[in-house]
Amino acid sequence: MTGDSGNNMTRWRNAEYDRLFAEANRTPDNARRYEIYQRLEEIIAEESPIAPVYFYTRNNLVRPEVKGWHGNLLDRHPLKGVYLDPAAAVKSR
Image 1 (cartoon, rainbow, N blue to C red):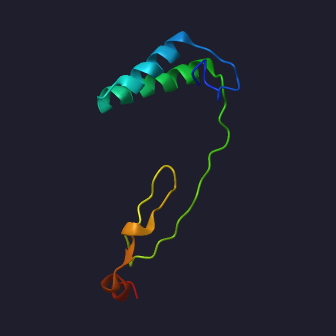
Image 2: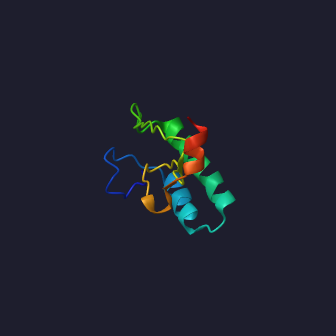
């Protein structure tokens, strides 16, 4: 949503938002970055340049014997760490 972003189809601009966004990208401190992101969300909510009305959702049914499967924001699941635990399979029956 920065003013010069190619993804900003609304053409909305806010100098404070752009400044804070740049600061968040430079900041190595995760706690400070989180504070900045919260303020960025507040600015968008106050000025309402967009109205998100749809969120992607996905349900994953994972059997108890499947281990190493973890949900994540991007819904990507590399199978390298996923395995079956035979002991858990016996307990779930």
